[in-house]
Length: 60
Image 1: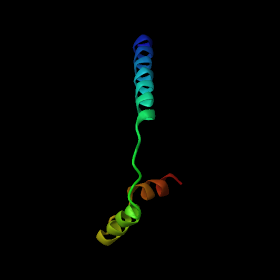
Image 2: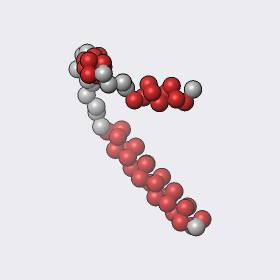
Image 3: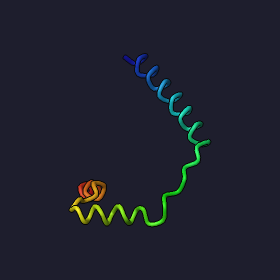
Image 4: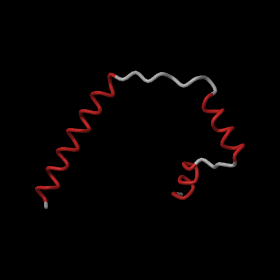
């Protein structure tokens, strides 16, 4: 079992390193101005509560 766990961890570490290296080259375009506020306003209009706020309240 220890051997399998070590092998799995090595594989995940290698995959993480590859993803990290490829993400450095990736240029993410910025969101349009006001996009976040528009999304939040639409969620409030529909009565949707952002999940992250609920999760943060539960952790306290």
